[in-house]
Image (cartoon, rainbow, N blue to C red; front, side, top):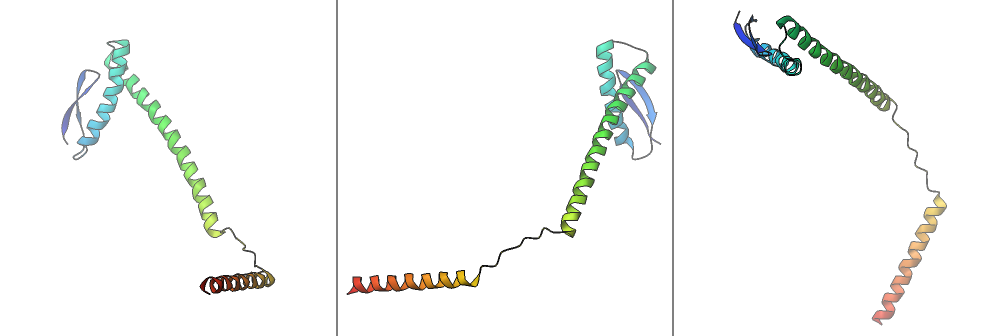
Length: 127
């Protein structure tokens, strides 16, 4: 079990951790040191136990806020997933109206007349 020296609020501590957990211990100690340094800067020197307690409470408060945000994000994601699943299960039906046959016949007749006019114009220009 590795022994490590960490610094929190300007004070050194000797702690032990499991093999391979050194990185996590350093990261946690850095977070605690950041909070303790703020406290020492605001209040000045204080007993070690009080400094650690206050810094721990500040971290716990921040963690609680992040957990609330995480729960809210998870709730939003669950709602979005339900909406997406419902959309996949019940796709929106789009109906395309059928063009009546008389309209297509009329358009074909107009197109044929336009082509006949174009042919006559071409003949007059050529002749």
